[in-house]
Image 1: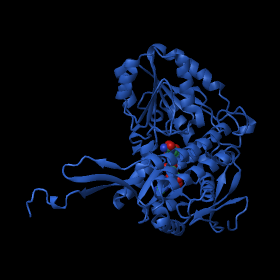
Image 2: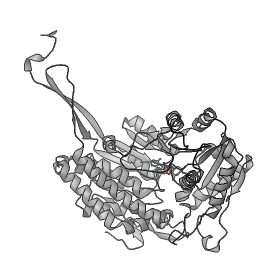
Image 3: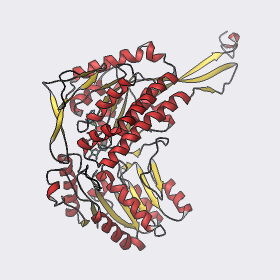
Image 4: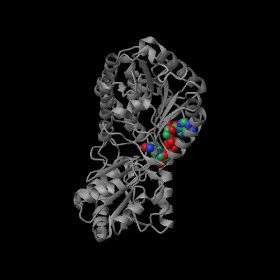
Length: 496
Ligand code: TXE
């Protein structure tokens, strides 16, 4: 690495780490407000160099003609190296986004297993022979786009970066990864690990910088042939606008305001556990957070009472202290935003049933902490109920019957996830089919598997990541017709 010390992080272009002493930005620990280190800022020139490197690498026969099992071997070695260095990955994420240690470590291991999953997919996914209507063979082959841009957010960077980079490489592309400016370091370590595992240079470039300059330069670059983005809806819309002009495909995994539903016949203790985890894990900074809770009116007071008790008992603390259940929010500006939503909720008539403030403990004053918050008394049209807060804030609302519930739950711009708690399996099925969300959990919440497609309806995005077909997101199909009878064209002899 050039000019790099423990206090700095360089970006990766063409297999080389590049530090930009004249232009850096701070990586800040949200638990303490201290600067972790300086990170090199990738300008449009760095982006162009990264894309040129990726283009060379993806067209190199060494990669283009590499047999799938050999490519799978590289992905498998990346998975092994990530597993071996899971603590290092977890620590970087914890220092940059403040999630508690156990969650960071689980996410590091999950990211490694994503590489393992796509190594298997790379070896086992086939092309298809399709039904023909004559004496010819017709086939569908799948080919990479070429240079793919992967733009990731700060809430779960390790898992989301793996979720994009592993299938895109398995599909035969080269990837330019632009991590969030809040959490750049896991991506930089991933590139290092990947090269050490034998990934040829140029197949993974990491450009660290902001969205406005670095991100835009990447999406606008004429040699970027596909963009995979996870982040806010407004940013997704602007990226999709550029992609539309350029006629390149985009995959967008955006925000959510997921309805979490408890029917009167549910196992209430299990439901409350699911609701607490579903909103407060990761301090609510999850696209699938169950942030709108609908409780059937007959059990509303009981359920909300239990919930408030649980929310008040959660331990907010420094992320590296054993027993902390909620760390800080990922940044100070983000906490200000969460606080503004809580103020708006008060102004609109909401009652703060738990939390609603910064924790008073002296040890937490320097960090971006916020208490787990439960708000009642709002209607489904209130600002805090309709907009994504992306913090530890749960709005609770009563419902009457199933029709009332479905109308309220679907009255949202978003459609990422939902959860249903009921003992009635027919109702579970009916409601699951009626909810306008890309994911439905029944008597569980936030259960995720790399094998299951993931993505949203409505403003929550376009496309499905994960699953075996996650590889197809990064490929274009090609139909091939191969005559078995040279005399059969044109088939009806019209022009013969
Ligand atoms: O996200 P951005 P922000 C939601 C959540 C949050 C809000 C804003 O509600 O409060 O979005 O968060 C890059 N061209 N989610 O501002 O801006 C940026 O550098 C290209 C939901 O942090 O969307 C970063 O790498 N790239 C979500 C990434 O986009 C651009 C997770 C995400 O940042 C760009 C995060 C541009 N014009 C936030 N502008 C989820 N779905 O899980 C920014 N970026």
